Image 1: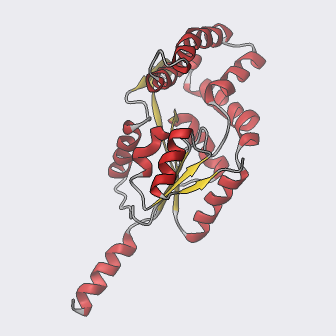
Image 2: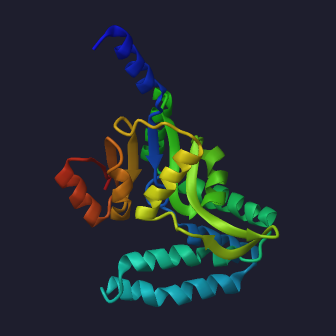
Image 3: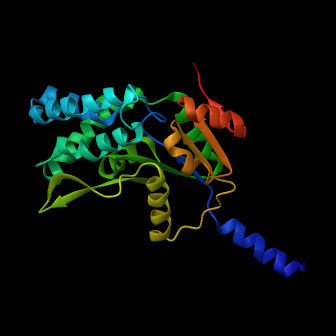
Length: 241
């Protein structure tokens, strides 16, 4: 290979960004979105009927999934798709106040220091950082400034006439669709990513598609299936327990 061609290839490689992708719920934090919103509503005495309705309508499916009588993945998707019902009827400004409360009063104290440190280390190396999660994208944008990441990709919520309808704009950013959401974001923002040098952090086997995209997958406090998968593939595992 001649010197000029080698220099061009090297330049092209340097133009690509190295991305550190972090799942949120279960990875960066051990909290849960529905719990945070429920606590807000109960403390502020708003939309409490929606909280009770959401909880008691999903518990039977959760119990059935635990008893292997219902598909666990379908159960998780159902919880995620129905979660926006907790902010149905809220204006964008009102929901933003809820998200700020949930971020500051609930999640910030539940962030995992060891994973936050990993994020800081990636930033020091010059890597771009991203939260990729099934959580509401609007909520993740609030967390964006708190944690200091470059990008967030989450589930889009339907808004009509400046009011949340209680529905998501499908797909839910979960499982294989999580990888599709990531790809759509990269294309929309004209990013060039060096996936071989990039890293991804996740706690669930549902994130296997995203973990397989990068050269440095990390299983964080993994569930049983992801733990076995990480062991067999010799991926890094972070588990302080």
